[in-house]
Image (cartoon, rainbow, N blue to C red):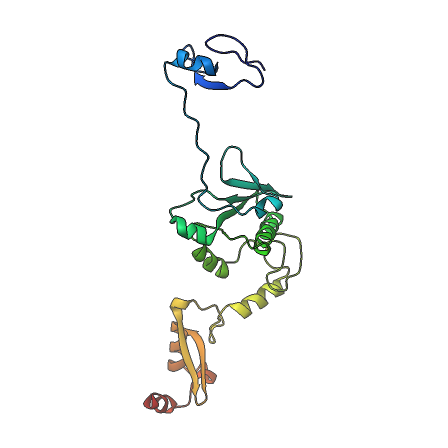
Length: 249
């Protein structure tokens, strides 16, 4: 497509610098030659933009890992994967001070639509590659908080069983119901009375015996059943042991 100068009406050559401006004759944008700019707009030529200084120093190794810089957003690097795109953002992201962002590293995130188990597996693989190459990155504005959350929250899965690590190549977190049951038996605290999960705000540490000391977790309401009923005699400590124990403290 050939463009013409709004001032001199001459076409632009391939190597000619042109300036994009709004034409007063219409609401559309047009172009003028460098020599025609001041005369046409009654304004001096715009100053050339300075090179963008990155907030976080860029590790040259990211180029070897397949990341390319975006032409439209300086400081944003991307890598096209089998599914989706992985990003490394070296710009000023969030409100963290510069020294903290440098310490924690560039922002890394992954985008695919829709996100599937394959997408999440590719995302995890890309993070493993960054780890192996000692490239510091964070996955949120506040890396430390996100890591604490991810430690306790089960995500939607990447096709590997959360318990036995089997590659079952499907959506979900566990390959079988038995793995799900064994995982929660291993990681979740169950009440010794009702055998249902105990949350930290409803957990009571109950002494089954004092000599030797044995403590179990129970719900607040279930603890009342131990002491006020005879439904769970195996969880009642011998009479008098509590007075002896606390007398020694």
